Image 1 (cartoon, rainbow, N blue to C red):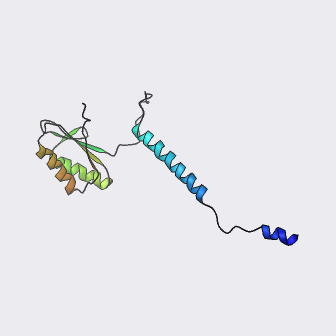
Image 2: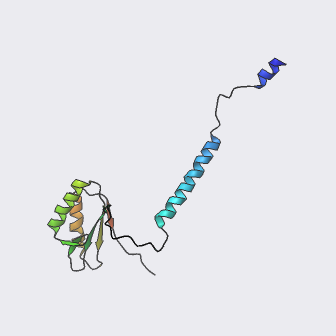
Length: 136
């Protein structure tokens, strides 16, 4: 009888990972759904902040080309040479800072190309072109 009990008790030499994989996939799906909901955002009325200045500085630089051809870096008017110099300074501080270009629909294509040429010379690769959604 003792021998029969020992035969029934066997050590497992492998682990069934299928339930663990099911759990991992479920957590991944929940994570993806949560992140996409957070990225799209929900419109809420945000509370007002105190008058204290924020310690966090935005890293994205906006280059705006107005209808008459004037160029702005963030909100400051600049020439093409000043734009290149300032972008070079930003690149020295943070080599991977993003840049967005907002060009008026009436601006000459050449003005946008000149700005793109400066970005190419400085090897700024994180670039976005801002457009409005077409309303039908």
